[in-house]
Structures are given as structure tokens and as C-alpha cells.
Image (cartoon, rainbow, N blue to C red; front, side, top):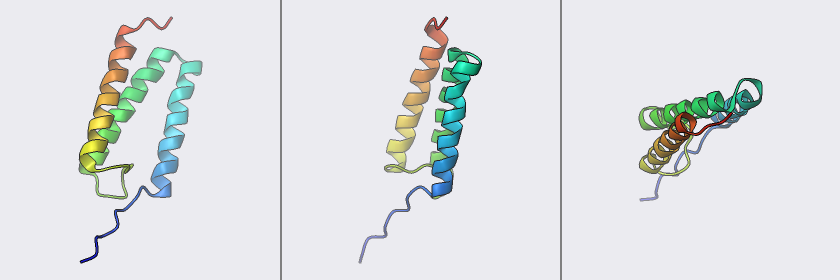
Length: 89
């Protein structure tokens, strides 16, 4: 039996994630670095939740579900920790 080819991230999801990331990074210039970092942490954790529970094609897919969710949770946690503990002013 041939293996089913894994669905990759749709271009709409990829463009939406890129646009949201640009907006969140620009918050560092417009508001503050801490707000930007904490927003990116929330975005990473939301991406982990989307990857865990959304059907394929609706979330950003890079590797297996477990790997994607684990990496995004760790990234979100580290960004939140750094945003809350590092003096950025």
C-alpha cells in the first residue's frame, strides 16, 4: 500500500502567520519590546493549540503533530519567561 502524502501548510495559513508575526514584531517599535515578546509568546501558544486540535490544513504544519506542539509550547513558555523577567527598558 502506498503511503499517503502528508498535507503541508496551505499558502493562506503561511501568509497569515507571516503577517501576524510581522505585526507582533512591529509592536516592539510602536509600543514596547515587552509587549511584543509577550504577544509572540501568546501567538506561539495559540499556534500550539491550533496544531493540537485543528484539522490538517488549518494550522501551520512542519513535522509530526507531537513535535510541532512541543516546540511551540516550549517557545511560548521561554518567550513568556523572558518577557516577564528580563528588564527591557
